[in-house]
Image (cartoon, rainbow, N blue to C red; front, side, top):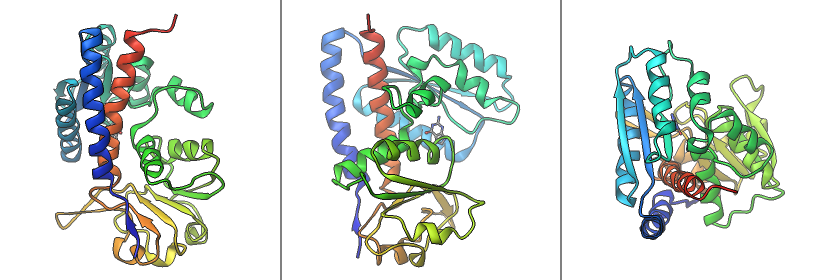
Length: 285
Ligand code: GUN
């Protein structure tokens, strides 16, 4: 039976350390990190994510400013709002929850955020820094997954990591981070032919597909480490992209849903906000 990778417990430890760090920073600089959070529309899943992010901010002492905009808000209005956050010295991080309504260009919005305040790591400049493996703000979910693997001393170097899913938020950046940690990386996606022939080779298998319980035990190698990024609601119950029961009998270790990757994403957002605060308050000469 697989060992359970407890993202909730790890995230709580990191959160406590972060809370202390923010206290120290407040003593040193006389101010604390501030995060602007924007939701356009009423996507119920987004509302829950945002609520959890704001609660976590409050716990560690990050000031969060929530702006809930009507679904019909014009793009220009959102751009104006981001501009005011860019200029505001009390705001160190800007988070625009995705997905956005169809009439708003995600690319335009993400590019308008000051790269130094882009705590999601979605601005093209930060994406470029990730690709070239130079310091910068990194997307929260993949960075949280690497932190979780490191916490459990799961070796990455030389291992075959198979990432199923190629989104800009998770699959693509995670594949790059694993590559920078010297894994051999395969990216699979919805058009991959004979998917299981790849997943069965994985020492580290990451499921970021968005299909409930898609990865079954017969698709997984004996003693693999399985990371489940999925959050799907089935009959009112949260399930991942991995069929936990059948995969847990084969894997060496597995992240549960809930309590695996999700809490690590949130704590990484807090860490990124502190990173942005520190870089803005002590700019490089
Ligand atoms: N939607 C799903 N995941 C994320 C995330 O990490 N950041 C933002 N801004 N939106 C998301």
